[in-house]
Image (cartoon, rainbow, N blue to C red; front, side):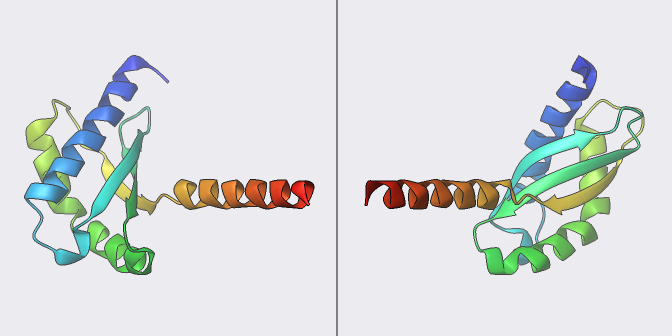
Length: 115
């Protein structure tokens, strides 16, 4: 991936986090952490990965984020110097859950080996 796309990805994570924290009024979007952004090379789409503190609220949060995507795009256009603002697609980042599951399996294996 080239440096320009990497810079845009990083800027998206920072700026979307700021918009969500300070400017979006929807209560379903509180306590959201933006973990990554992946913008396509042609800058037409951006996948924005997020996590929430309460896993039971991830569906409501996903719905709220997608509803607020137009507002978020507008704010990003004001903050990031880019000719065309990509369409934002929010995706729940399950890599943390996956990592915890792997860690638990490793602990379980070590327990069995220690017996």
